[in-house]
Length: 473
Image (cartoon, rainbow, N blue to C red; front, side, top):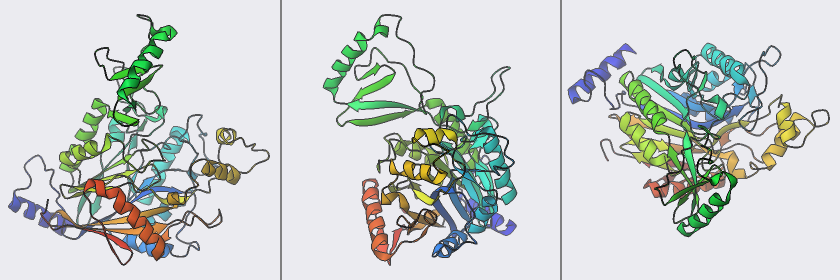
């Protein structure tokens, strides 16, 4: 390790790529490799089980300096757990056995994000026990903490080709899971590193006048009677209506803006963005390679397009020092962009979807019209999947392998995987390399999604390849 670090610093000094404070430049030894995948939803250890084809995936995970995934579950032993399932949860109660921690390490994972809509499914007790299991398993993780400063801070992984920083954030989160800093005598609040978004519904300009008429007809529309919007509504940061803005109107707490195409628009909270950019800059000053990861469901799991705030936000992160931006959340693939020689993955979909969780929690039984005295946890899960996750594309993804030469992305390989959509419930959710026809379909879809970003993906023997020349734009 000392030899690599010494070589890196000599090379950087000769190139004049850093100063006494630190640099936003990449500073890894040639051949540095990052494997990045999307969401990990797994309830049991897998490496010692019978899962045909999974060994080929594990080999890819192991052949890298850093292997990253988004951990979308809690880890604890329900028999000794002192917490409880929360009334406010991320849509499902994801829980794993303690053995999953060492098993993830055995798969090759050494870096994980924690900020997402499931962080506090099981309260602070679940968050803290999960942290303890990951620490004991030797997996570096970021995105949660006892206050906002801890949750937003970069965490560091030492590798043979350089030191890697990870900053984890979520724009999709449950409101009560947002961490806070101390203020005067009030202590800080444990939770996750959040990026609040102000959401607007985009409508044709001529519709705004009708919406104003509806607003003015409501009982609270008289002067002084219109209540201010809450500081947080869902996972968004709302802002009041500006009477001087002719292109925006707020009706019953919902914002509408004028646009050419109906849809949704998002505006990132400036204070959250400033905190995140500072944490990225700080993380890069103490590392050779910085990864920023964002859990973003917007505009919804149905969409393969990125929300309108995300591209400029990802660019700002890279300008601040990030060497890679990894998005996840919608459980579907979204496009890939190369910006300043650095990869941006807008969503890497599911990697592990082995969601055989027990227990589910009474609130989820009720949400799907099930009775825990009659129905089983598996039947609740099947009912959940039938209402939005029954499309085969949720069981298709890629494993990304980014290789760096001369401190630039030289090649990005995309290995298509399928998670056994047609298998029985007890066996699906574990990835294997997709067979040729399916691999071609996955990569062609990713080609189409990436084309608007100017990214060209070639298909070589059922593997997607993005090639860049060192020092190229």
